[in-house]
Length: 129
Image 1: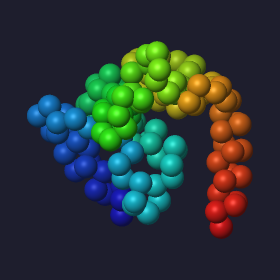
Image 2 (image 1 turned 60 degrees about the vertical axis):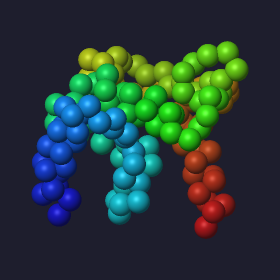
Image 3 (image 1 turned 45 degrees about the vertical axis):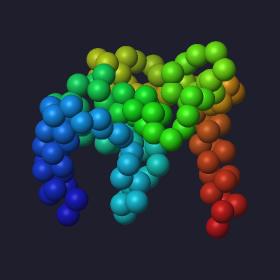
Image 4 (image 1 turned 180 degrees about the vertical axis):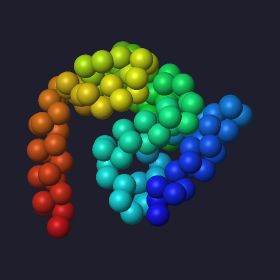
């Protein structure tokens, strides 16, 4: 069912981009079948297939959401900010799929490998049930 509506959603997202409306990746978390992290990268790929440039997609996953309600501590990398960075194997500007090739994450100033983050997430989900 969802696959049938993706072309319309992609066309809509592309028109929003052309109109200059800021796009934010990952705002569809409330929909069934959306898995945090994994679905984010799928959404980024769908936007690229729709024609949204990779640089705009990356802004939609990083700096655009950071502008909404997080004050000055998140967003740009700067002294006094909460450093959160993702190091990937390839250049996502060449292909947005490279954004999913995560080597490590600097989360609030602390470095983690992807496997460490996954283990931490699984552990927190086990305790939540």
